[in-house]
Length: 623
Image 1 (cartoon, rainbow, N blue to C red):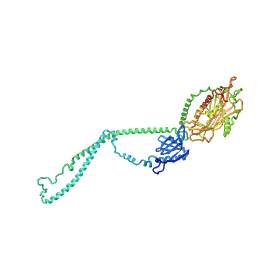
Image 2 (spheres, one colour):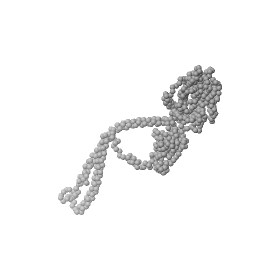
Image 3 (tube, one colour):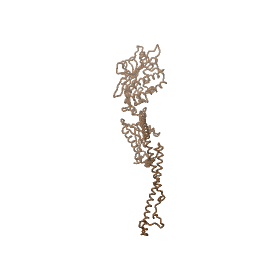
Image 4 (tube, rainbow, N blue to C red):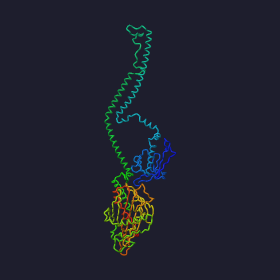
């Protein structure tokens, strides 16, 4: 994986307003979890402008990104166990990412957090960018007058409130009028007192002794008893009717008090009804919130159920029963696909008769002596019919000798071998072996197939050109190196069966012919596949590398034809011994691995032998 940082230039949105420095753009290769079928895939990821985008590769950036996340509300979570992995979630959208090493992971996390801090809403730069007027406007709207819309459910109450508004307007006008009147009265009283004082002083000067003995003031000239200072007009100053205004003020305040009393009565009467409605609404809200939480939880489980946390691993969130059920369901779907393809294939040939009806043949001849079921190990000389020489020749010959020595041994006297499947001539045995919690059960299958020879069976088993014609579990494969005409190194990935991790295998495949020393014993054809290492196919993070040691051992038995007839396929029977020692790696439960092996190995053997029968039907026999 590679990563790089680059500074954007010439764009205002790439510059930090506070420091004036450009925000760093980060781009590089990260492994992204795509789905449970394809697993982890390398993607070119770019961090820029508070957005995380990914492309299939760096060269395809010009075609547009395949997905993007806004980081403003993103949650970045380093994985608890995987030091190279971190997850980014926005609502129910989750990206699972893996860096090359923990240092690169930390670099990505720090850069993403920096972009969030610099570009996220609520940061100082964000507040400066949004400005203060928006906040002031929002704050002002919060101080708007409370309307009467909150009381819409009470019609009479609304009317009374309208009356209150009217009374308020009248009262305000009356208060202004009375205030003016009081001000005018105060000014008039001051002027009258000043004028009276002046008149009294002048009268004392003009009439110093006119006071009568009884102390009364003198009358005016016309003899009227009216005092010198007549009483004020009842309308007061400026023509204001003080008495009328006082009566109106009293009536207005009385109306306000009456209306308030009525409003209080109405609110008290409706309080119980409102409380019941509030309780009902609160209960509805509680139920809706619970339903929302449950739905959100289910949605998260469904969106993540297929993510890397639920796949095979030491910290998988899926239990063994769920693991088993998921694998069974996936295999059932594959079986349906295979059944559909089987409908267009040729019909099966007739079952093979008992092996005792056939004799062994060597060097393309059939024996005239007593028929023998198979050769004894002592009569088989371990001589390779191939003169292939390459750097793995020694390993190949060791594997061939081991298989010829141990794989053909009878399992009748070994109590460790358990017969797990028996279908006609096919029998499958298993010996349970575990090492460090990993199932390493050796499997051995025996079968007898009519109409084909050992050479033909081994040829189709070894030939990579026809591998996809009969092998349905392989997703893709390629020949890494051709060592000789009969030896190749093959890399293949198997179809993923979720929640198990995807497996890949790198193995050497060699085909040999083992000559028999006894004329009545058959030659043996053998294909051995065993794991090797190669610089051109190193292990990857996307797959678990399995280790295998597999052998297909075939011997041809021939029944003599009648009279002078030529040997036909009706006279030919192939005795097959298939052995498999597989270390699957990973953390799949033992119960699942054993169940899958018991189910899939017989299907594989029947599918392959049927394919060989169909391919060789009507063709010359290849001994």
